[in-house]
Length: 357
Image 1 (cartoon, rainbow, N blue to C red):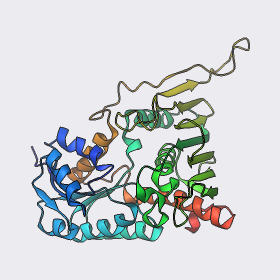
Image 2 (image 1 turned 30 degrees about the horizontal axis):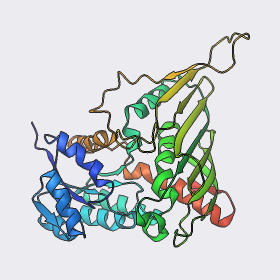
Image 3 (image 1 turned 90 degrees about the vertical axis):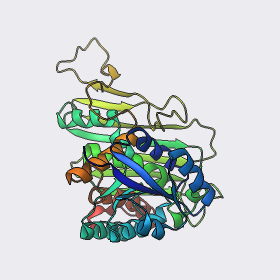
Image 4 (image 1 turned 135 degrees about the vertical axis):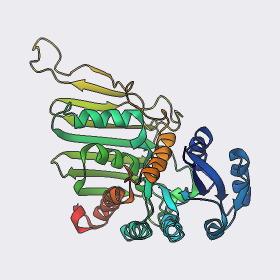
């Protein structure tokens, strides 16, 4: 059996606690050997829970001194590019939390640096790695939905939960913090987007440097499908909710809102996914709408039901087999084009073509 991939994690707050699980459950494949954070108490607490001895305050020190093959970047969006580029220069593979970075220039620099160094770059778009996502993608690829004609998604959250979520300079705002998940998932299902039209607003006074907390957008996909997206952090008296829908000529997929605001399995972004298939010769005496049933994921072969476990083990497998990750940097710059294109459209009041970005 080959040696496990040795990983140093940087950024011991927030999302890092979910990243810890795959390392604890699959030490034969991935092993945390170091942790780094500028807040020593956070790093020490993470190290205690993960059983790590090597604790660093300085990221460059970890890259230079720690016994690691790769880095797991769980810091703010504005730090992703410099940290990924430094890791590549040190010969380390990189998995970086979404969103990939704040600018397309930084995203391109990350890809160039990791390509030049011959190391793997993967963006942790974890919704792709759920059994449900694999099952939906299979249905689409097998033609069960027919021609994909439309899609929609909404995310309605009370927030923001972290201080850096409110500052556009650190990559805050609803687009990079929450809508990037669903835009990426629709891209995974349908393909790339060619044009976007967006409107964004800043509603809450705590948002800083122009960070948006209310966005609506139209997406035009390369295959001809159209989509709409709504995203909000608001003080409105409304329940937290998130869902997506993919409509085809033969059938429709739709997720259901999570049972609770924090339906941890972990962090369920959607509830049960439903599939409805049109009848070839519908009975006019029956309702037009097809019956929807829960999507069957029983034959989906993945390490587990947790998308965090699945994504990090996918990262390890791609390094071991020298293959391109499902959510590679090369792939995920297309997601960032949509996210940043929507904000650009809101600024200019005009549609934005992805080919121009």
